[in-house]
Amino acid sequence: AIVRGSGAGGVASGAGASEFRHARVPSQSSDNPAPSAAIHPDPSSEPPEFRTARPRSVPSPGRASPVRGAASSPSPPAFDFRGLPWRTDGRASGSSFAPPAWGIAVPSSRDDDNGAGGLGRQESTAMAVLQSHSQAATSIVSTQGAALGSTQVTNSQKLDTHIASAKKPNPRIKRDGDFKDLVTQSTTFADKSLFIKDIIEDSDTVLLLAMPRRWGKTVNLDMLRRFLETPVDGNGKVIDETVTINYQIFSREYALQPDGGKSLLKISQSKILVQNSEDDVFCRHEVDALKLQGTYPVIYIDFKNCKSDRFDTVREGVKRVLNSCFKQHRYLEKSDNLDEEEKEKIKRYVGAISSEGLNDDQIKSGLQFLSEMLYQHYDKKKVWILIDEYDAVANVAYRKFNADDLDKTIELFTGIYENALKGNPCLEKGVLTGVQYIARSGMLSGLNNLGKFNFTDAKYAQYYGLDQGEVDLFFGHFEVPKPLGDKAKSWYNGYQVQKYNGNYVTSSQELVSKYNIWSIV
Figure 1: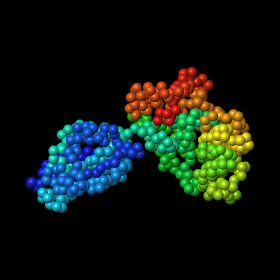
Figure 2: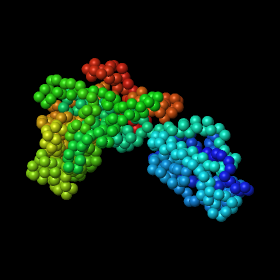
Figure 3: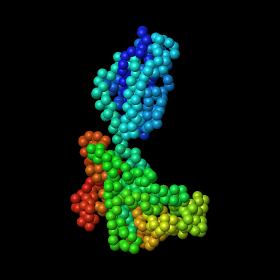
Figure 4: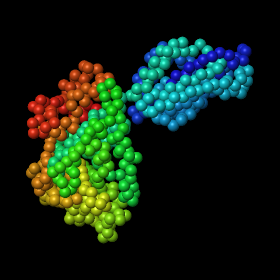
């Protein structure tokens, strides 16, 4: 914010201007970036119009004001403005905008109680324009009297132009977190949302997507969950999806164009082919994608944290993951569509203590049982089962387990996957992600409805990693110089995949460079 003094008069004869109050602002953190690189933390590096808009010196405690004739007064204690907007009186007003890192002197509008110079109460007006966190806030203070003395702004047109340039937020991409965090806490991101359309329209009932590490598998699976999942309250009653954060994610516009223009996510502008009815499996019709948002019960489970060095601790980890999964649907305990025996069985999985007593058969049938209960609760609406890191435990088991523990581990997960994904009448579709298809394990060998895809398959490889066009968009957004961009390309574009031309059978032979996301972002 810039303090602009204006006007003359209002000062008693022979007296100076008002005292100044100084707010010393701490350096910005990564969570609260400064609004623009154009606002310089070092006063010596500020543009001339910034320097002329600031007083020549700032009073320190117990020293005389630099403005001739003003009363001597100590400065108030420093105030932490991080994460708060600022006003002309130094108080927070409820926005996330943070001021630049250098101090700002603000004319005080209070009386000079000491009577030095015979200064009367100054009349002042303030206009504050507070915008969202993606825009800078500008405060222009007009004060009657010669409060700023010789520090008047002489080039207001140039200053206003400089203020306007501060509206652009610092570029950032949320590295860790889920899909919601990515789209709400980033100034740009790669739009992979048509992944949802291809998954829904795929003819396979169960899909295994095996992609390299750090290629966005978890974020894509969370994006699919947020698109599909039916919103309910604590009693399991379906609520209006348009008031939920998931619907808002897919219905709002994002600044994803090279020129900074805004648009909806690609999936939100698309139509999806869906089956006419349960009885008519051969005929499909197109619907607007957003009409399918929030219309399916979803089971989401992640086996990443079940890894260990022996079978007993793996089994305990799986129990904890199942317990957490059932807790997401705890409303089933109150469902009018379930009988008391089924509710009691659900409590076995939901209870922290009772879930520890689950035997291997109950563990193996847990996901299948949950899908059956959801199917009944939602009036026979089929269920999506999404499994992240399906192979995390097996990959460790093959390296560290003895033969007996390895066999027990493979048997446990084979039972989980076959019960949930093979011949399950309550299943709409299943999606598993991992880094590879472990044929030797046999964990998925019993699934005769499984479609297997990896980064050599053009159809789904396009939704993982970053291609050259996406990287170029990021480099432009972050203003990366071309020499550095070329160097990054020589270091990190080590993958080559086929370019998908819309037809999986006759995919193009043209190769596309791919980057590991975490190497670039």
